[in-house]
Image 1 (spheres, rainbow, N blue to C red):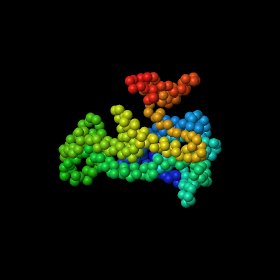
Image 2 (image 1 turned 30 degrees about the horizontal axis):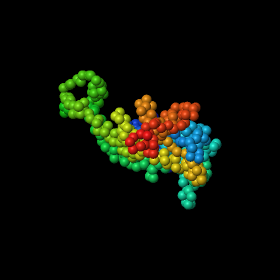
Image 3 (image 1 turned 90 degrees about the horizontal axis):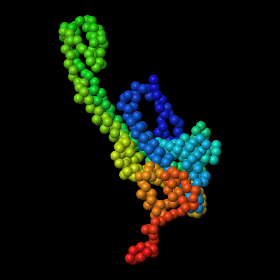
Image 4 (image 1 turned 45 degrees about the vertical axis):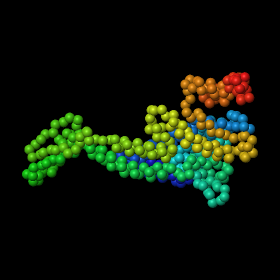
Length: 383
């Protein structure tokens, strides 16, 4: 039995190659290392995709927040065949596994889709994109103004991660061989020279090993008959000699180095249960905010003219909803946010996912009496 694996790490537009790997090959160090590396890589990618998928793309018209066609496009239905969450996961997966991603107009509608393959023609001052593949449909050529090009890193990090893990492969192979050897039983048998001189000794010895010695080694409890002319001595196979710490440490190193390449704090990948507030803040600052700004800027320069943008027509990617917000645990902070005039009640309710209140006062900004402008204060105290 064999599995067929796709070579997913390819440049856009190239033919997908198929490689057949036998099940037995998956048990060797190369196959095991591939599984660990793939798991670490896609865990990091999915962590980023999940975070971006939780962001809300806000639409502004004339500087005022609205829920119009752009908001619906980015947050609900980018195209006829995908919801927003599926769209963001495909975009982030393509961007990190292949080094870049291309958003193109929907060939069969008015939405946007992530291209499955493409080539860049940089032979002219203004780039164009050729051999664009959307599903099974091919698009001959699109200009720079017609697409949105997303490239999270200047250099594709996937091949770098693969090369970096090669050293761990060699160490893991050595550690696993040592682990398996020490975990098994190794015996030596001393046979009297008189017995070995018998012409039928080889056949009888092989039958004895198959019927008596093998069941003894593979059984939890068994008796090994000792006969004249044979002396058995165990040379390895003690439970105290089995050390798996080295293998686990090498596996953890692959995950740690992969997360470091993504700039993701290792605590988020390792699944530590300690307070991850600092790690989450670092993850948002170093990973999510840059990719969100990249998507935001690329969309604004392609979907709005300069005049439209200058008068306040734009979209923004709001990353504040990524971290789970417990309204009861943050009741005091909520009061300060509303009481300081920073947000209206409806703006705060929208941020935590609640429906707006259909009252005029819910859209107003309030300020408590102990907060006011400098002009409202006297030298001796409150006015």
